[in-house]
Image (tube, rainbow, N blue to C red; front, side, top):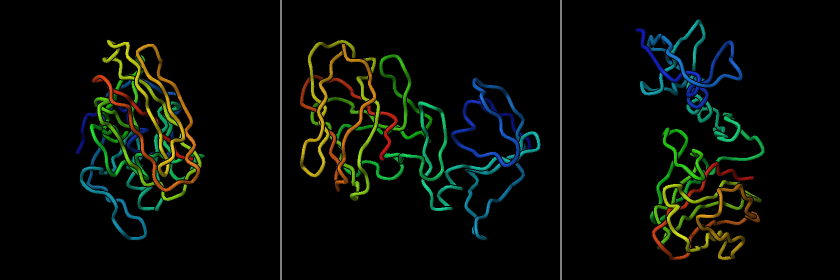
Length: 223
């Protein structure tokens, strides 16, 4: 069975891994004709794919679902939105949304890379993170299990909320100790920050109660 697919160049690196030749330094989108023939993917004689992530053939190469392969091998799969790179296993950091997403939260919308959704801060699109849908009582709790020294992320206000002058504070709390605070307002551009985690057990991210403004946390990587 053949199927027409759009967005190959921009999207394939996120969702599939090529067996065979690889293309580099490409961007944009194009129409491709992919061949689906009920290909089954096995790791150690165990089938790991479903009909929703079936491998396909294009130009003589078979493309496999990265996340299914990584999980079958017991390795984390992460996406670096800054460099547009897919990583299987460790690469100097681990994707928070993959290894320990918030287990408890309020006023939070998650944007995992796999969803294909994004949010906008300072005019740029981001994913691999989450948004506090407003600052009044917003928080997220993550179980770190004492594995991580620090966390890097891009912090900013959602672009649509650049209407208010009031300040509000974003706090990062590890094991009930405040390790970092950032004052946000419409004049503060989205910025990459590093938060010490000190190999703590629990991370809490919260905002001071203020006006109804959205805050974004993107490209979150634990180290």
